[in-house]
Image (cartoon, rainbow, N blue to C red):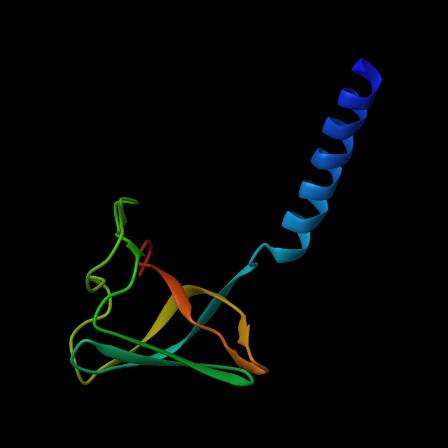
Length: 108
């Protein structure tokens, strides 16, 4: 009885690890030229253009994290600047997108 319980725990842990390993979203860091609008930005990188608007998680110049809002370094409107940001790949019903999940304002 004890052996069956131990076996169940071991198998459950292994199965959970494998499922999680294959379903964890990878975050990819990029640096690209941003075209900044009024609370919107498009960022060009080789092979892809990313965009975000209104609110995005970000890290300020001092290293503090912000869960939402407009990044201090994505200003002023009508300018261009180099930006570092993170994305993940999401596929739903065969359609793929790469949302911006974090903007890094340290060092910019």
